[in-house]
Image (cartoon, rainbow, N blue to C red; front, side, top):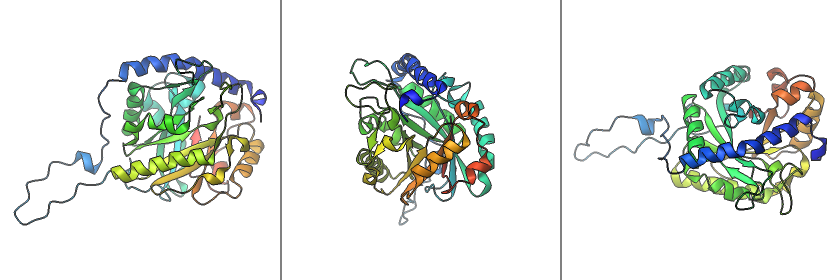
Length: 328
């Protein structure tokens, strides 16, 4: 589906993303030299100091870092349910409107019906790198969030005992470069990434004028990098989502291979009426490899305008069953 066929609301949301860039850049400048992130509340960081060992005894190893609601493995124990958004912008999703604690409570209510067969692990999907309509100083048509923005959302996620995913719209940059720019945050046990190839454009192209694209090989490079962080820092499993609105957005998907410690999720981002979303779902999940888990995205505005938001019961009737359900 070419960009000209998008709904007017979808186009307006893209414009909203571009308008938000200056605000994010200002926040980032204020936080670039700030301190390291708060540590998560885990056994490894909240326990009292151990007493000095008695002679001849072995000092216990420190507890391993945990996921926000315990454990180190995401599936099959959990279903991820999240909100997407960015600061002070309703155009980019529910997470950007009002106080984060209020949105976390809304998310818990939205997620409750999805706990039918699994525990819920909430997700804050912060649109951290935003594609822009202007080249910017480096000519890459994207703007990164600074430390102050990421820290605010990580603190909010931790208060909610949720994961934070950093959503990347790379413009003319590449995914691995943009992901590595947030490495100090990705060393945290409760931070992962979400990649949005719709906004990954080629030289000479402008985000929002065309659908961008990526390859399985490029996605594989990010997954391999995340697996290295997990191994080097003894982290629990990390989530790597890639959003897909059409088949053309991810080419040669077979290049994306499994990696230890990384849960790879394809989020099917079909927009519109129930039937249209189901058709996109069936096309994009057909012959899905076991190492790529299914995810499903719902749009409060666009889907609602096209006949009504799908209910949790309808989402849970999808096959394969989604491991990640995201609301924007």
